Length: 300
Image 1: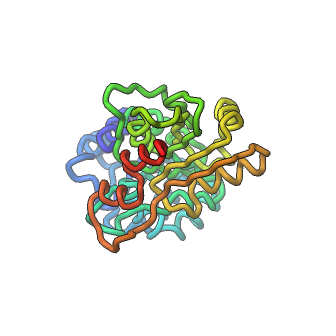
Image 2 (image 1 turned 90 degrees about the vertical axis):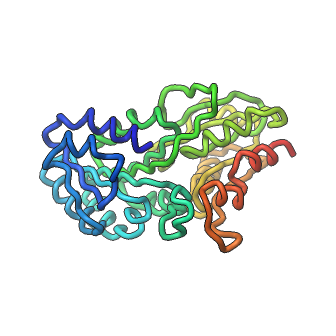
């Protein structure tokens, strides 16, 4: 999604108050944005805590501040600065985090983002965007840019199945109607699940994509609730650990709103079951998050 991100920010670059800070990342991808912004494109170096604090200071002066780095170097390395400098002051800093989930593959756990939106959902006023498809990025950048408070934007790789056309961007979108289990996938996992459930044997699953969190700010729409009441069976698919993920949040939401569930399945990141590192595809297969495993789970 980096190309789409760059294009969306270049289109926004004529705004004189826009300032972009990168943690020494973006070579071979963000040069058009650098050229469009000139002195407003700042390489903050490999100093992510300082980058977040500088962005908070810029935002406090009324500038539209964006930061960009690898996801764990944002939410994990700079958590104190996000909490104290950005969120406690409700400052509109837009934090772009590249490589959600196992996106950085063989670079290992230090570069993986498996608990990011769960951790950040605990902070006040923070909006979290997880675009599902490449075509979502422009709409997400526009929404993040216009946000009056802090934003975390988790970028991955768009995995739209061939021949499929998703509905226009929305926090919740129905991708496939069905009368079977209600399946909710977060961000790019929606494309993986969509590919899996296109095959026969999916028991008529009703598939939804979620791209904005937390649930308190983006509750399920009425059509989703109606489908879940009719089915009673819920499955959440996310490239994030179970603790603090959408699965737990949505299960709690159902309890709080008296939505009965007779069957619940949570397909989430399991860390490193074999103790080895590999590609994003390798880690997904180990966790049962690849299309084949999802298909098998619903064919059973």
